[in-house]
Amino acid sequence: MNTIVWLREDLRLFDNPALHYAASQGEVTPVYIFPEGLGGASYWWLHHSLTSLQVSLAEQGVRLILRTGEPSAVLAKLCQETRAASVVWNRVYSPEGIAAGTELKQNLTDADIASKSFNAQLLIEPTQILNKQGSPFKVFTPFWRHCLSQLDPTPLLDNPRFVKTSHSIKSESLNSWGLLPTSPDWSTGFDARWTPGEAGAQYKWQKFTENTISRYKDGRDIPIEENTSMLSPHLAFGEIGPKQLWFETHQAIASREIDSENGNKFLAEIGWREYSRYLLVHFPHIINQPFNSKFENFPWQDNPKLLAAWQQGQTGYPIVDAGMRELWATGYMHNRVRMITASFLTKHCLTHWTEGMAWFWDTLVDADIANNTASWQWVAGSGADASPYFRIFNPILQGDKFDKEGAYIRKWVPELAKLDNKYVNKPWEADPMSLQLAGITLGKDYPMPIVDHKEAREVALAAYKASKTV
Ligand SMILES: Cc1cc2nc3c(=O)[nH]c(=O)nc-3n(C[C@H](O)[C@H](O)[C@H](O)COP(=O)(O)OP(=O)(O)OC[C@H]3O[C@@H](n4cnc5c(N)ncnc54)[C@H](O)[C@@H]3O)c2cc1C
Picture 1: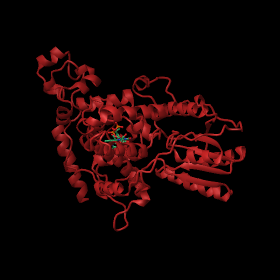
Picture 2: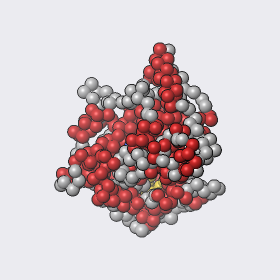
Picture 3: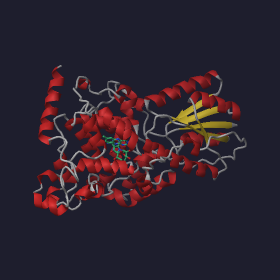
Picture 4: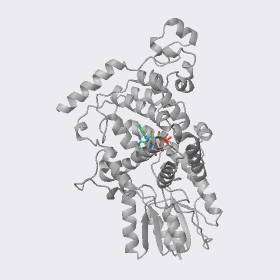
């Protein structure tokens, strides 16, 4: 019997319930359908991730079938071609992903083809977690406490053992999808930083648990040091699953291989990932509307010049520019700096968070609709559990605190490399001699600030006040 497995955000063999189930039934046809609407950096990642999956499957005599088109129609055609008796998949929790799964299930039922879906992406199904009143949680801490009380370390699923495929149906070629950038090729910095695919994910996870997790809690805010797992793109493409991270961290804490403070702090971040998806399932409008309706009348401003300066890392605030340039060069930005840059765009420039979200969507290799949406709304102040609006990040103090010696700034904004530590977060305050010694002419080699911090802060607070009274 042939079972079709529709792969989406689950590009792995280990602990992959849909693949595991299909393999236990007999012959398997795994299919990946071209995803519309990803950002450029994600397409780069996808190309390499699919290449890696093709190789792993081919080692067991199984071909990954690539097709383009509307999923229900593509899968119906494949059922005919392979004479498959069933289609299975792992669930995707975005509004689009849920709609596609629901439509497919209905069509398959109508066509008398069996179907089954699984959870490979979350620790717990969002619909299972409700408060005492039977409503969704709107605050992270009680949500996560409740999740932890429900979590059960179920064993992880081994790699499936496949039967060699007997049919020889057609697949599109990955190269014909043209996922890699050519002119210009902006991905050279990506190659140096990342190894997409399941093996790369497992390697990173192993290194993190062996070395890095022991300094996670205190180190995770220092952008120049690699003190976090760097697993986000691997998680976004499902090359590794959260159950493995939870299960193995939990075990390592119990056996005292890692201390509970660092281990639990890391698990809480996996909790934030879980919470972002949970919010999107229960409140799908948050993709483009504020979670907190008080922000419906917020007077966002349309200023293409400020937006372009932010995108290009030319705001005149070194920590902001360093972050934006790290993002462009590598497809990644450190979490602390994501918060600083997002706060700058939404509060200092009063630019709508959806503009920032769209830029991140295009440029991040870990672009993830749930994490991106929830995080942007959180920083903008309109999200679930967001910090109070008046806590506006000061980019100078943030830089002084988390990049004391300016090492992160010197790496990504090389024109400031020779500037004294005292001024590296505020070059406009440097005396002419210091600037000259560092070889900088402000306004020529490096921009003057595009907005004044104090003034921008006052304007943002006034806008917030006014929007509340509308
Ligand atoms: C404005 C903004 C936009 C963001 N956009 C994305 C995005 O598109 N995709 C994305 O994966 N993360 C996003 N994040 C969250 C976070 O910055 C990244 O997940 C993290 O920096 C990835 O590095 P890491 O894997 O080393 O994280 P670690 O610290 O090792 O954390 C482990 C995992 O936990 C999850 N995680 C960590 N922090 C958060 C968080 N705040 N919210 C939700 N999940 C989290 C991620 O899956 C991460 O890989 C965004 C944050 C901000 C402030």
